[in-house]
Image (cartoon, rainbow, N blue to C red):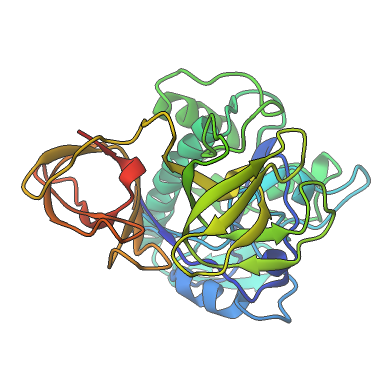
Length: 351
């Protein structure tokens, strides 16, 4: 699996700045013979779009992340019991160009062997992505209502009437029950019940006034309790935390230290810890050192605003260049074949 950030900064789901507490994950299938995730990303990156999922995945293991995971998407509509948009991350699987829809969720398979192979590969990517997200948000994939399809969401009264993903999975021997078991297996069987108590996934466990952090993009507010964002910043910026209000909805007041214009209160999930007054970051890293990359975004330059990719691996790397003035100060190259190649955040390096 290779998660690539492709945030649709023009889509209303992103610009409105509304967030959710993640209680589950909903799997969708795009409903048309289109294998490329980029087609959907391009279509939905406009101010008039009326739909957006958090990610679209391909058969080759590529996952395009279109929204921050805790941003409220428009992916499932609603039903008699409300909307899964308020509680669930939505992920679309692409479909092969070897099928032809004949009406509703019915389709004609033009190349059964190729279609079956494609569906099996997207299934495996979905298992890996959902296992990753379950770990991030302390979700138990086998707990009732946590991992559901769009069609299951409709039966629960929280989604519109769609047949995915069962309309395509069932033809090739795949089921939602097996999907949930495979996710738990991919997690090492260590899923923890929950989904209501969380610190927004990747948010740092402890941030204090005076700490230096990375703002990873998202809404910026005038106060820690403001109902609406003043602005949305689709950038990455090295910031100083100038105030903290842990009782607020947006607990950290951040000011850019790199001229990128972040000034205001931000959500916990928009913050990644770089260094603290306690000195938790690596004390000294030099060119030529061997370090452990612990996972996270990888950038094309030390000052890039958006990651080229996200590597959710632990890799033994050589530091081939350093720019201490950059937001992502270390250029790392994997020495163990795990594919890390680029500039990374200080917080992603352990010496």
